Image (cartoon, rainbow, N blue to C red; front, side, top):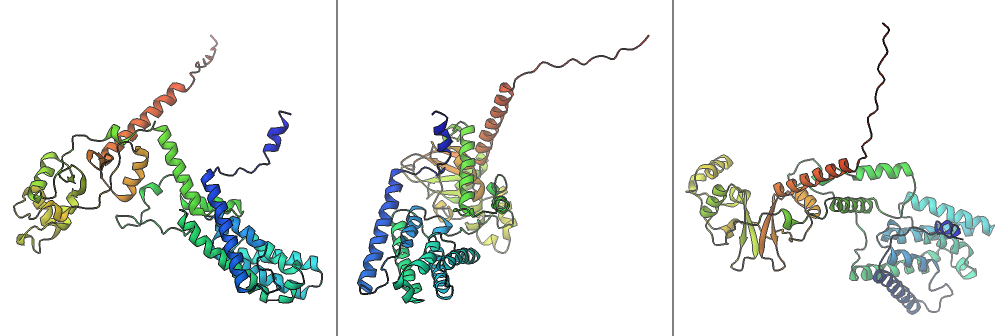
Length: 408
């Protein structure tokens, strides 16, 4: 018996676990969707012989509310898939006398055309079957069945899904994200995209498998990247910002003159200053780039361009005018002391941030994290992993080589 149970457990699908709250959310959405669709259909056409609700709409509700992120549940999938399947089903029923042959051809043709039109929707197979075997009322309706109830049911259910999913925290429809823009405005991919699994890798593997997956490629990429970061976080023993950040941080107020701020940058050989209010809450950050691009360097800088300003930063600040609040960058991206560096690494790399203020729960400044701090932490983790791997490698005794025997 102990060997039989594991054998049968292999037939249980390996669905990703979801919380009780998500299960209740999906179930409630289906209830609301079907009730509203049926109620509107009853009010609009209560005297019709055609069914007010068709069975495939129940299957569509499973997709739209339980797996709204799936490509099979998107608006074009349900509208295009159900409409195409209904058209094919009615056509087969009208021109093929054998109902079983008509049913088979209707479902098969619907699948082929839906895949070609990128609107594959599993319940649409049942729509095609219903159009052929649904009974005298549906047969008599002819192509009117495509509009009512198929298209109207689909539109009503979709409208409820759009409202319900977004109101309950599920972005619907799922839109393919726009390509990430390099902050340096070059053709290079973002740093986090140059290592690990890329979109091109996923596309190539999917092409090799040559099967339909009920998940979008960008979702797979996001899941894999999150898994990579989780694995790195586990390997790095959960190193936090508090463990590697600088604590003795020089800051300025919004009313500090730019001359004084520039003097701080020079004297302490730093490239950024957090800007805090009287309660030490971070309200901005002042960088060398802010001084170059935004500061007023006086009339002597007119027509002199970037070169003059670079020399001024290196040698003199007599022409620099204004206060920190005039040029500081805001809003400020900040980290919490308990934030793991695994979460900070891609953020700093892709956004091009060299300095990240660290604030407590009240947004008060407690430290500063730089790319150098993160690199040092990553190096320490890498060295630690290597040392651990060496320590765990079993030492095998060296094999003695037989010396050749020479004849006298």
